[in-house]
Image (cartoon, rainbow, N blue to C red; front, side, top):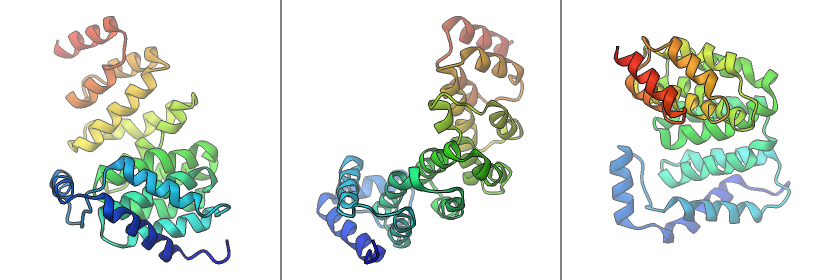
Length: 244
């Protein structure tokens, strides 16, 4: 759409969201996320409904325009605008390319919270990586060694789409997770366990063997997530080994 104005589209979404928020929810979410942003207090289902309706109003909008719309939404320091930006990118993800990971990475670095990072990484980057592993792989590989733990978490979570699609990249997971196993950052420990839990839904034997091989390095939170979906006998045996 040649006449699409991303700033106007961002303002329209904001105005549609404002009446749906409550001061009570705004205060609660701001406190929960420990954020300095402004909060409108809009529930997630309402936010998604507004974004989906807005997107339907722009039929034929291409991926660059969708990305520009998301960046326009993100620019204002308002939680719901940033959450809406993630939703817009999620809608656009099947049409985004590996080159768009530059924008995704920038937003991840500016996020400072799982509330945006997990969608940007698990949904958007993950969809790009699943469709174009050769193009996306080198950039996401670099994320795994980044100084910013949110970027490192994003590398791990980008694997989830492939796992859920039945195409887990187990060597890549190992290359990401092994150097991070001894990290003390909770969000890294949780992410490693989360990915192992998802792998175990289809390949519990692999997760059992991998977990056993790394018991001495694995944090409690990683271990609990890793064994959560394993057969009870395997989970109990690993628990005894860990305790011993």
